[in-house]
Structure formats: structure tokens, C-alpha cells
Image (cartoon, rainbow, N blue to C red; front, side, top):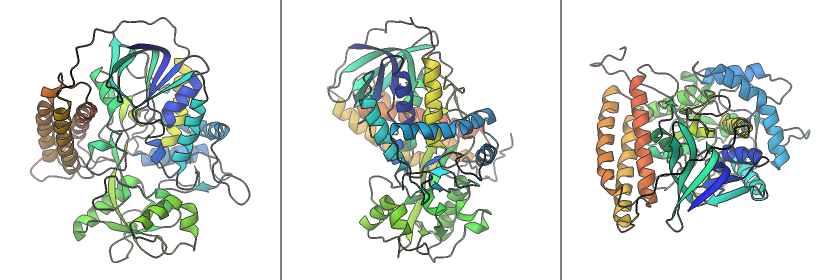
Length: 511
């Protein structure tokens, strides 16, 4: 089946729907969603969205906080562009129907998070991303020019002479492969946290857009910088990892050792609100020293009722496993959280392939550098989602290639392919956590690269037998992403931001 639209967007998070809603004024838009339209990384973003909205704040301060968190590797022009567009982005979200929390004076209630020098985080309690997601999906459903293709998985981009003209997708409900032709393609597929054993990312975060673009020879950068969130809820045996928002520390909660003593002041002047890479390494280090499976967040000293009122999701989740944040320490561990690198783009979200855009976590706009500043990610999605749409609608019309004929498809080996893929994915996630996690070594990275190559060979026999197997496609994509991360880690021998290389005595890291 071949479908034609003016624009096609892969991903229905904040970046993808921002693009779609702006582009829909000018043409037809297909939004390809791997799961339901509301199942995105955006929906799991608890903290909020950063913007200069207070009287005692300034664009310059927000810029400098972002550059500092990014360890000097940010693209300053991109940072300034994003920061200056931020108030307008908040206004647009409000116009769509997002009801940010208000203070007693009816002004926006602005929170504080790690790395920020001012209160500048607009939020909806501790479920900001979910609230934004619900509003934007509703807006998209009411826009007649937007078609939501839910439960469709991207397989590969269609390109000719470095021009992207569409995408092949798999209908996960009936196994049919569809070809979507479009004048512009926007990748808003989120990150690839599921390449790691422990991650705050949902199951859909398998790096699909990044891997597809890599196979089409799009340029990728900064993939060694993967941000690990220091406070995921420690819940042994849980299928998914629950994030304990940094906003809780912004409200006054402190990281403590098992004996209840604070320790972060020994690692950074900002203590528990230091940049995430610093906090994650400090937590990891203490866990190793103490041979402890977790550390703790202490919110017991906060005013009575504050935790329940401001953080209802966190409170409910903690109570579901027998922890009352008012009276108990909250057990936490680091987990892979955010992909700071990705497909290299300009200020319009353009990749190195003509008519292909990348926005949100799949992209590397340069605003995050070596380590993302808290609550800049939702902001990036809105700002660059709009910027990409504005650019895409100005493209000249008339690009039309016909895709090559598809191979014949047989699904006879899908059950076997699923079992093989599941096993390979599990091995890969453990491998990446051990060797490309919070602390890395040259030897470990080299060993991991050899192992990834072996896993790729192990997956390969099912390539032509089960092209309609979702598990195989996702595992193939994760292997592609893992290889990119590992090679990027080895190419940057100094420790900076989210990339920490442990010195190995018998190896020299200076060359």
C-alpha cells in the first residue's frame, strides 16, 4: 500500500506534534506512532519546561546555565535561539490548553531544578509531560489535516541522491508494510534509553529514527553523551523503572547515604542540585564504596503536605511499594535517561539529508552539549518542532520518487525471530550497562564493540525471514545505536559531561 501526504512525522511526542500542528495549516500530515498516540517519552517527563518568565531572571542567565551544564560543548547560537524562543513556546502551549500551575498571586509557579540559577521551571505538578501530551494529542485529533497512524513502526527511510522522500512503515496490527511518500519527513522518535539495562525510558525508546537515518547515511554526533538520571526509584524486579523527578530535590529533598547522612556537598557546591552527570557519578561511586544496591532521597524534612500536593504521582507510586515519602527515605538508583547526541541538525532541524528533519531527543541541535540542563528537553521539542515546520512548509513541491519493489514477505519464522531478538536485546542491554554506562574504560568499550558485532551476526539470519517482526526490527535498531555509542565513546578519550572515562593504568588515554 502506498500513501501520500505533504508531510510525515515519525513520533507523537511534544516535538512531533508541535511540527504536525504547525505544518497542518499548510498541508496534509501523517503522524506515525509506534504505540498509541499518547505513549511517548514526553508523557513520562515529570519535571517541567524551562523558560525565562520571572522578573529576576534573564535570557543571559538561562543561556549561561545551559552552557555550564553542557560543559562548554553546546552550540551557543542554538542555545540562544532556544532560550529566546522559550517564553513564546510557553505561550503557545497555553494557547493549546496546557494549564501550568499558578502561584497564590495567579502568576505561573516557577520551580527550581539542578543546574539552574533561577526559578524558571513551568510545570503541571509532577506530570508536566503527560499533561502536555494529552493536550497536544487532543489538538491533533481535532485538526482535519492530521492523520494519526497509531501502532505503526518505521522500518526504513526512502532516499534517492541524498534526498529523503518518504518512509516504509509496518502496521503492527495486521503485519502489512506501507509506503508513505511525502514532501518532507520529520523524525521525532525520541531517544534510545532501552539500549541500557536500567533506564527511565518507556519500552518504545529503541532508537528507531536514529538507526533508520544512520542506515541512510545521515550525520550523527555526540552519541557518547548519554545522560544518567541519578534518582530512579529502586524497585527490584520491576518491569519498568519509575523516575523520581529532580523537581523533588528542587523543592528541598536531599540525597543521603543508607545511614541518613548527606554527602553531595563533598562533590559539588550545589550539593544535591548539581548537574546530573556529577550527581549520577557521585551516587554510583557511593553505591560501589558501600556495596549498597541503592542510596536514598530524604524528603521527610519538607513542610507537611508539600510532597503530596506538589508530587502526587511520586507519592502514589512510592506508597504502592510500601514507602511513605513523608516518613520514609525513598530508595533511588541511577538509570539511563536522556540521549544528548543524535542526528546533527541546524536551527531548522534539517539533517544532512535534504527534506529530512530531526527534532526532539533524536536530534542533536547542539543545545545540550555534553550534558543536558534539566527541563530544557521539552522546551527544545517545542522550539525546534516549530522551527522545522516553518522551514519545511517553504520547500518547493514536486519531489516524487517511486520506491523499489518490496521483497516477498513470509511470516513463518516470526515466533523464532521474536525469541532470538529478545535474547539478543537482553544481552545487549546488560553489555551496554556494564561497559558504556556511568563509568567507562577503553578495554570495556573495545570488548563491547566486539560483542555487539557478534550479536549483529547472530540476529542477521532472521533478516529476510521475518521482516514483519517488531522485536527483530527494534533489536536491529538497538544494535545500530549501541555500535554508534561505543565508537563515539572510544573516539573521545577525555572525561567530560555525561562521558566519564576511568583511567586504566596500563593504557594511555591521551592519544
